Amino acid sequence: MDKKINYKSVRLKAGLELHQQLNTKHKLFCKCPTEMKAKTNHSAIIRKQHVVRSELGEADTAAQFEFLRDRTFHYQIFPEEVCLVCVDEEPPHELNREALDIALQVALLLNCETIPTELHVMRKIVIDGSTPMGFQRTVVVGMNGHIGFKGKRIPITQITLEEDAGAIVEEKGGNVTFRLNRIGVPLVEIDTGILEGFGPAELQEIAYIIGIMVRSTGKTKQGIGAIRQDMNVSIRNGQRVEVKGIQELSLLSKVVEFEVQRQMKEHAKPETRGANQDGTTRFLRPLSGSNRMYPETDIPPFVISKQHLEELKKSLPEPLIHKLERFKSKFKLSNSLAEEIMESEYLSLFEKIMEKVKADPTIVANTFTSIIKDLVRREKVEINRIYEHRFFELFEHLADKKIIKESIPEIIKYLASYPQDGVSDAVKELNLRPLTASEVKDIANSILSEQPNIQFEKLYGIVMSKVRGKIDSQEVMHIVKSLIKK
Image (cartoon, rainbow, N blue to C red; front, side, top):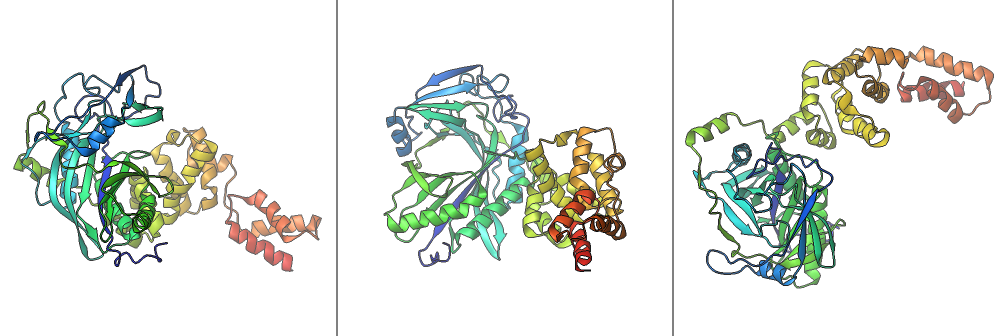
């Protein structure tokens, strides 16, 4: 699809808006936790929403549209995770300092030339029901930044610290239900300038680089809903269209492709559209204008001292994009595997193991990104029962050739079942001592002596059932093939 359209000739222009939840202890303007662990709500409130004019006395077009839809909003309240601030029945508390410092680190990592010395919290009108107060609190923490991409400078126009909205549960006949344990969770929004001369795949790469720079802080949440992408798209002689809610980064390029195709066929209107799972988009509402912001008078301005900013600069973490390149060059990881381990919750453990153990980096990375995931998904193995030092033992055994890579899944399962045992215990109990080629040959010859006319596939299957996890399967195949030929 990408080859059929010349994106330069159609003058594709795009702007990215990337949202990333921050992994802080408390929400942005209250002391509610951000874990969002509660499953069942103990109560709910019901509200309608109406239009509020901006400080200039004008009403936002998108807000008027949502008001005319006349929907009723039901908000689920969860114990310990939703307070009076979350439902707008109590003034907001002081701005979360932990969240602010993370957001400032993001601004520094993205090379922002302008970081306000005095921060002013604003209210952004939102009456689609996603927040019970009818607005979202937001504060600009950085401007005029940039990243590099293929020798080009990608402008970062603005970075804001915001409170997240509620998560939609269902919509039926004008009644919309939201979960409120997500409301108020801190997130950063990174806005790029107009990006022109790039194709869909390149735009997705740019989004990935920005995302990985944000995650360099080590203070971001993971999982469904923790990262969301919005973008603005236009083509020659067309209007700007905003596309919201691209949940998966891998979907971004496809959304651009489909949206360009749609705009080539239809006359694009200034509107906001929602991203579907197949990459197509649907109309949501008219495009929001500039008449949707007004000051948050319940929160005083916050001063950022030069000294504090200098301290943050000194403690900046290594940008993950640098780490990604190092993993590919030093450890010889493929691009996809390097990206996977970067996204993994085991990234820190992988690095620690690589510092102390001379095991094959590809096998170690694959264990954390693929094998463990598969064991958890398919066999419900409780990985969190395994002590961290057991993984060091595991890969030390591998490096010393006391086990082979094929035995890793069975050893991990054993360690999860018997946390007090070590890797040596697992090898002994599971009889996973590596076999030599000569030993495998003897096993195969024993079977051949009883079944001289056995076919290769059957012989290979029987031998593998006896030696699985004790010798490389390719070596077994080579041994069996040589014996069958004889």
